Image 1 (tube, rainbow, N blue to C red):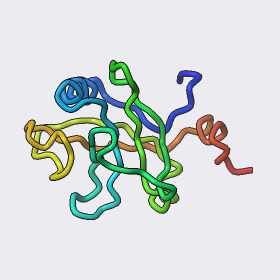
Image 2 (spheres, rainbow, N blue to C red):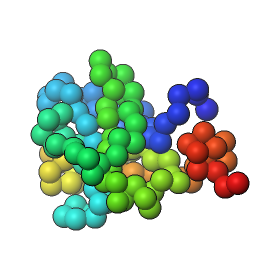
Image 3 (cartoon, helix red, strand yellow):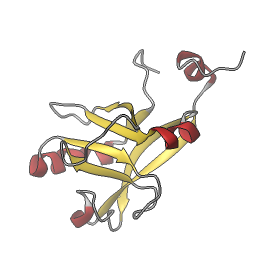
Length: 129
């Protein structure tokens, strides 16, 4: 594990798609959907198209080999359920979410999750006493 503490990561395939989409749309960000409309898909938007607010939590940033890291957000209410997990953004063939920029590409982003390890829990201040 690197010294940088992160709740999010990206696969090589998803990073490649992010580079392609950034060339078309400019800098991008993700908001993890809470289940409305497009299920629980990670929604990818051009920066500024989806406005985050005090009800959103910045989970971290992912390095997709771009000039700017890609920020990943989730609603604070949803975060309460997911705070013990690490999320990896991946991509698979299929129809993307209706509002997410990968929609027309024939690919769709998805989340793969795992429980945080004991050392990660400790570093996030979530370890049991």
